[in-house]
Amino acid sequence: MTAVKGRCAMASAARERLVVVGGDAAGMSAASQARRLRDPAELEIVAFERGHFTSYSACGIPYWVGGQVAGPQDLIARTPEEHRTRGIDLRMRTEVVELDLAGSRVRSRDLDSGSESWTDYDKLVLATGARPVRPRLPGIGAHGVHGIQTLDDGSRLMTTLERAGGPGRAQGRRAVVVGAGYIGVEMAEALVRRDYEVTVLHRGEQPMSTLDPDMGGLVHSAMNHMGIRTVAGAEVTKILTDDEGRARAVATAAGEEYPADVVVLGIGVEPRTALARAAGLPLGPSGGLLTDLSMRVRGQENIWSGGDCVEVLDLVAGRTRHIPLGTHANKHGQVIGAGVGGGYATFPGVVGTAVSKVCDLEIARTGLREKDALDAGLRFVTATITSTNTAGYYPGAQEMTVKMLAERRTGRLLGVQIVGGAGAAKRVDVAAVALTAGMTVDQVVSLDLGYAPPFSPVWDPVLVAARRAVTAVRAAGA
Image (tube, rainbow, N blue to C red; front, side, top):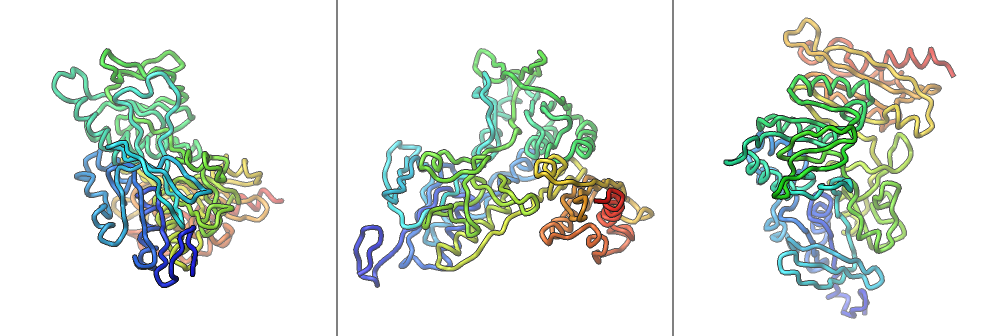
């Protein structure tokens, strides 16, 4: 006889139940991988998703809003029906509202009917994602104020955009984006593509705080060139509303008011971990769940977590950070699914690689910024160069600026930022590999990178920056 969570059965008939909370990248990747390894006779899989969509690319939402992507259906990798045909009991529009760890069960609520029920589990995956940061300001909950994280968020924004520019709206084409991170910058461009007059309010010295300010200045110039008004050092204090309760303007501490028919929050996201916190599960400094390398929640034998609700190890800084990216989430899901399915896999950590664009300007970063290196107590030097994406004589050559950070004594590569024309963003992958391998800037200089005039100068810009960094390291001494 084999006992499975208090239910006695013959060993030949015993079946475990996996409960997955969250139906996007990490959750459904975990469920799908577990199903590949264990058939329905061995493992029952029940998944809960609070929204209307599963397995989609949230990163594609700005391109849907901007018109480059026809609609949300183009961003969906796998529908609920497709998951169900694979033997996954996927329950849409159903939110898990309580975790009972002692009883190995979850309480869920049907968001349409309001009915609630408990579901037992043998293994649990928490993939609750992240939510847009919403500061506690007057009017922040008004109609026309949108955070962008899910396809449901995108659908609501599209409804507002259609209403704002519709009949009877005298202005209708003014947008204010609060925040100038990746989402803020990408949404600003998307709204410009929809013929909106766009103002971006941000508290930093330059947009794109994921870059150092000198590199962010290049992004600022590109945004201005597109007709996007950017206001630095702007502290938003209130969303002003009209008689119908809709956003009409954004007010700042400086006493300025910026008219708005739609307000988009691009301040960033935070881990959605209220359930985990209430259950007493371990959280890191940013509020994300803490896991081991196999993505098991620390201190829990049968609970895993992945995606935007966890903190991951920064391989350069040596500490955990919240880095919400779909690339990580899908890898987390594969690792979790292997563990649930009886195999073994690990997720060793990240170096913080990310790319974006503003119009034709490509933006990339990996590793540490100057602020990050200072926070980690590292002594470092920097090197910044400007080169071209192709041989300088090749038609259409465009400028590219590369900034590199290296540890002062050892020359270990710490971080790279690249802003420039075509081909700039994906060059950061070379730096990401070098960071993961723990290479020095001397070693980066020796890399055998591809060369032909249509693709690169004889000395690739990354190598030129590395050469400059080597010089800086030697000049700094110990």
